[in-house]
Each structure stands twice: as structure tokens, then as C-alpha cells.
Length: 230
Image (tube, rainbow, N blue to C red; front, side, top):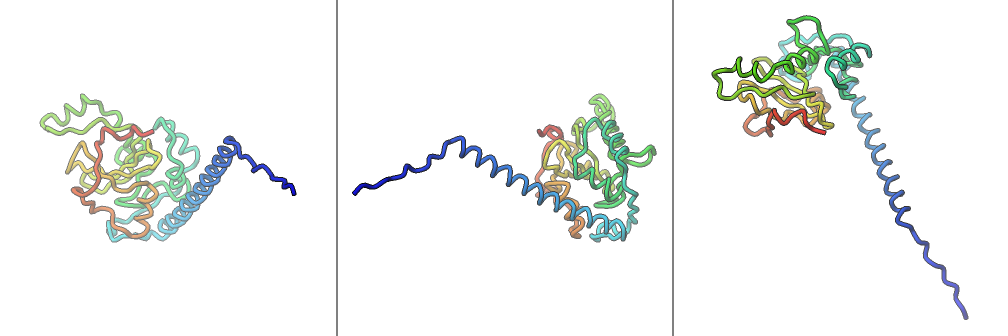
């Protein structure tokens, strides 16, 4: 009796590579879809908070936040031209769909842009800080042993907590981390306040206090190293 045996199907290396690539693309698309849903859900929460003028946290509840109407696409394009770089997509959505600042942690997010010298904005604060040279710093802080560093590229001041304390967004990093700049503690080190801009706003919307950061225990980075991420 003879038996006919079938040769096992050979899977070529190229097929494995293609299958792996397709799986990776599928996972990436799924992750992107989940991220978009998370962003959209947060946008809706921020809209409701802005509409009702409700403070999720007890912090700064004495300060009456006054959210402004959302910006236009032209406003964003003009701001990005002045800044010299494109804003992160979620930051764009916040200003396009929720409002032009006036809500959020601290005294509220800065407006995108302003022509008033008495009001900080993302654009004017960034351009003002970036215009300061090392000579300007040396002249202004002549008697200080520790002096500020040159303002890092693509790092935006987002909000003011008062007393020279600011929350800043590093747009050079794809993670969009939030850093606390507290000139009362250090000119050269900033503390990580949140791992991402989205997480920062989610914590605020969830009512978690953000102001009282434990500086000693917080992870800190040199300000001179910011703005250099790929």
C-alpha cells in the first residue's frame, strides 16, 4: 500500500513580514481610533465645563473664569506663522472647538493671540521669551548666581498660577508633556506636571488639584534640555 504525503505549505519570510506589517498597521489604526475617541470625549467635557462656567476643582474657585469664543482656522494659521511651527493637533482642537482660553487650570489657558500688551497669550508670551538673549539675561539677573536659561524652542506657556509660576507645554515632544516653571524655586529646573497635555486637562476636568505640586518629589528636567525632542 502506498501513501501519498503532502508537502507542508511553505511560508516564505516575505509573507511573514507582510503579515506582521499588516498587523502593526491594524494595531496602530485601532490605537489612533481610541485616542481620537478619548480626545473627542474630553473636548465635549471641556465644552460643558466652559458653558456652565463650572470649576471642577476647588482651586482658584474665587477666580471667575470667562471662556472666550473659539478661534477660527485663519486665527490658527496666523498664530502658527508667527510662532514658526505648527501647533499639536489636540491643542488646535481645544482652541477651535472649546474656546480661546479663559478656562482650565490656574487662571485658565492663555488666549491663542492678543494685541493687548497687558494680556499674555500663547503667541506673545512665546515670542517675548524667545526674544530674550543671553546678554539680556545676564544684564537683568546680574547679581544672581543662578540665572534663567534661554527660552527653549517650541515650548509654550499655557497658564499662569500667579507669583511667577506657569504651566508650559513642550510641543517638540510627541507626548506633549506639561512642565511646571516656578521661578521661586529654580530658574534652571522645571518639574513634570503631567505626562501629556490631554492628561493634564483630564485631571483638571476630573477635579484633581494641580497647583500644590510636591517639588522635592517631582521628576525634574533641565530647562535647557527642553524643546529638543524629536
